[in-house]
Length: 406
Image 1: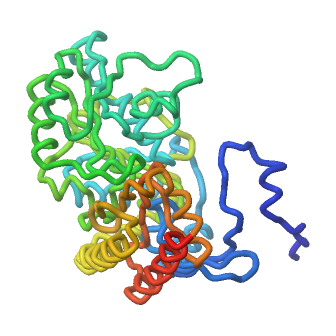
Image 2: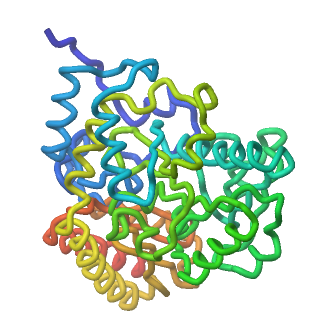
């Protein structure tokens, strides 16, 4: 028997929710593939992907089936017991990557928290408590816990919450000399996003990542790649490190891993994993059967030549059209990124107005993202159909035309 639900409207947000978000004026209620419908029945094309999460779009039949099947079996048993979906998922990730071991949690922040704790634990066990320093990059983003926000290189997110975690420094991204000057034998880890996501979709140079690897080896520091946003096919390889031929010691993954179901992971080697002995770290929900069942289905689809090659082809389709639009309307100075993580850098005339572009796109029935005030970000489904790409970019062009005319 269904209970009659009270009507809900956007104004409710301002009355009952903590005001730490400023959501759009409409409420999406249903999605299918790369299309979304709001309360009024208006249809939008989704190039935001839940911030690079909905890797197979909305309500993908394989994910719905995996979730439904598991929901009828077993939801949660905690880590006092193990479960079949978690073991299957760990095996798949280990077989597909550099790693020997996986740890599961519920989010990207938790994955990075575990990565940073593991790095400090390894250094503590092997070299003593003095070796605890972590080097991150300016404008990086690693999550919203106190530890991850302290490691992240954006003071606007970490200021105002009392004393920060110490032993953390920040050097400019893609600047190997700066890293060389900062690293020492007290460094336990260097953490890098292979593509900086939140700060504007900035890809790393290959020589930079290679140099970071060499410096870490020289100073007995661990190299951590934050692949929360770049992982699980987003760039056209299963993980972005594969493009660069540079292998990290620890890799964090989340976002696309569950295709919309909350799950995070770190991947690492046997040698490092043994430092997280029984009782050193944990999570109640991490590795739950529901999340792992969905993630298994995601990997089975994404980690195939068809999908990964498709991502590379779709990148070209997006990029060439976005460059045309950007040039025609004087909107973008550069279109950058890899695969289906694309950042369009606004020209001087439009600097600081990414939100205006976001709003104009929404008016035309298109969902996009910002990456800071100066970059419009696209992170659609990896299986977005070419017809949806073309229609979505037609809508984007209409938005650009109206915006620049106004």
